Length: 64
Image 1: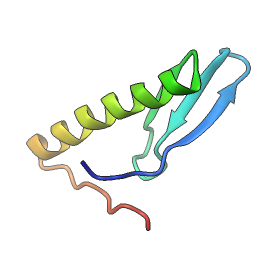
Image 2: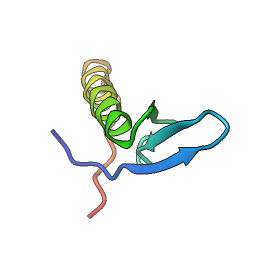
Image 3: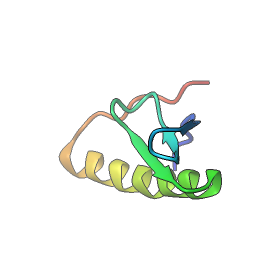
Image 4: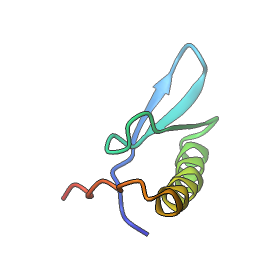
């Protein structure tokens, strides 16, 4: 699997951690804990990449 940067921050209004992958526009996952948010982001990322491959959607290059 490609490695993407995950930005993690606390959303006070929602009382959740938000995991964002900046290279994938609009990509967010959340969780009650930091670990849960990252885990959920990894699941959503795998699904996103699978759909992108099936649909021929370009996958952005990973930042170095």
